[in-house]
Length: 157
Image (cartoon, rainbow, N blue to C red):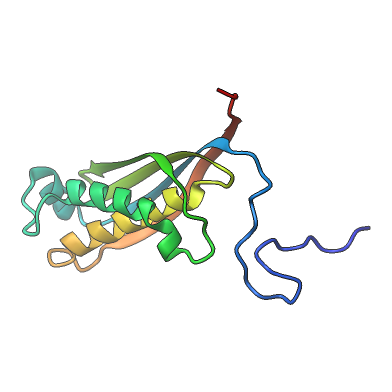
């Protein structure tokens, strides 16, 4: 039986550190994350009707999510800054009272892009919450999770 696995974000003294990925080859990486914002049906309908007093909820959330993905390494302390090739944030509003946010992030890098997708969803959800909180005191952000992540070797040019 072997000993416990070494945690890569800890140095030999148990202190947090950024993982050295310099030895890894760049790989095409993609991650999809999703989350939900639950609210009253009337609030969801106000989003759909464009009658939320603070503005276009879906547009603001989408742009906030994209901007957040680009700033992930500033927010998640041990993340590597990544050159993102693509970030897409989709905001689906269900009139029964749920907004589903799906973010896809892609890059060619030495480390994964899942934190960027998760950050995009989280910040988009916070923006939905902020824009509707004045008309609905029971808004809940829930179920933010990674849906999938893939990596594909990059062929030499």
